[in-house]
Length: 519
Image (cartoon, rainbow, N blue to C red; front, side, top):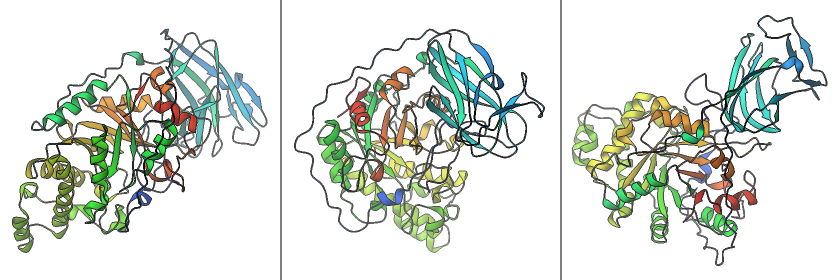
């Protein structure tokens, strides 16, 4: 099951990642980035907390694994039914003596008890049918393990939830929160692959062979940490450290990585964020930037009015001077859209050069979440790949910025730019259920991304719910870093730490445990 990578869209919308046969582990929706983009008004900067609380470090316990083969079918009609649930046999294609309906009605439940032979990870498959697409949630031992949507074909179909750690002797399983009626046939319990042997080894070689020594050493450090610990990270609103100050005031620790946003700079005004990044580096942190590139004041496809495909050209504009580019524009060799792209990239180069001049390496995530259909840079795959490569070559070859560690981030793995154009792969994971979730490690998504490239560290570049350290260790899910997004996901209106999605206790634990690294 691979999680959806999200974008800056309305919260009502959900999207799947990768392929049609992939099931999401959590209800993943998209955030609205507009609130985190600056205005031309000066940002009032807060001051760092004068005194930080001290918390004892939590040592996350070792986990017992006893891998063994398991394959067991549990018929729904043999489970415990309440309310209006009833066993039926009128629809063809079921196994056993029938199937169960009525689960969408009030106060109607079905609970099936699974026999758990040993402590290990399991895959749980639910077989059901519906005459129209129906959404629902799988619960195991009272915790939601993932959402699903049926095809609505009327035929029985199987939906698999992978890599769920269970221990003897029994576990209860049910489905709930159904948007319509289904016929539930059976649950299948199988042992999954041994997650304790995931291969986190990567070469540690940057895509840019001319990278500075400091950049090379930072990437080497990141690759050495990958698979051992998860680095703490926090996205900040432009021109502000409010989010990391709020984190520190509660947890007593600063995130290892401060992630800023470059959108304001590419619109031509100074957000003051580079100065904050320089200070954070000098204080011992790692700095990085995302770039939700606003055109005509918006990064959204519909609102920006920018047509990327009009900019695509066969001319080598990545290595072209502005004078030559102007000549081409005047003769019709390139479009105004193409010139606008170069101008935007060059504005970003000015800011990243300030870090380069101080020999400060920077993590850089341009054009986030491509493939989601929301942003102007995701108009079509061919144009996106051309633009990403243009940014890479313009900054690396023309502006000679050798301090960049490149992060590729998209919603569809088919939009991968290739190992030669990135150093880190990331995805964004959001959960707005506010239900009985278990702060999952999202290990299945991690595995899928590993299949995309075996030589790149994988990170969670945005989230609203941090994975629990216990689950990270239990599932051997050592993301390179995990970052809560900025604005309302980390802050209240009073600039205090937001606990709507992550409790204060969970914030403290994540920043004070044996599985994560802080500044």
